[in-house]
Length: 70
Image 1: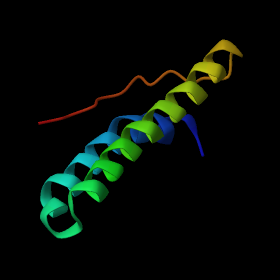
Image 2: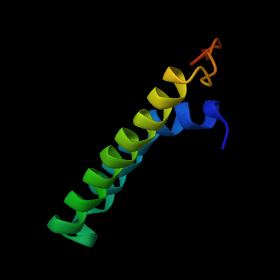
Image 3: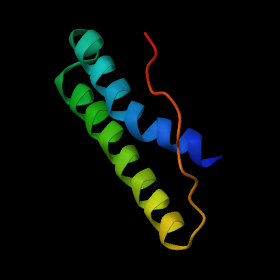
């Protein structure tokens, strides 16, 4: 997996977890909604550490592009 995909997943994993919990929490229940949300944040944290270690080893790529074009 390239670094740019990791950057995107770091931002979108918590968003995906919160969307699943917010939209389908009534169907999956309270505890699974909490688990999904916490997993989204945990995935983001683990991937952030991976990017940090890549940066410290000089292997991280710089993202220099538009995030949103409207």
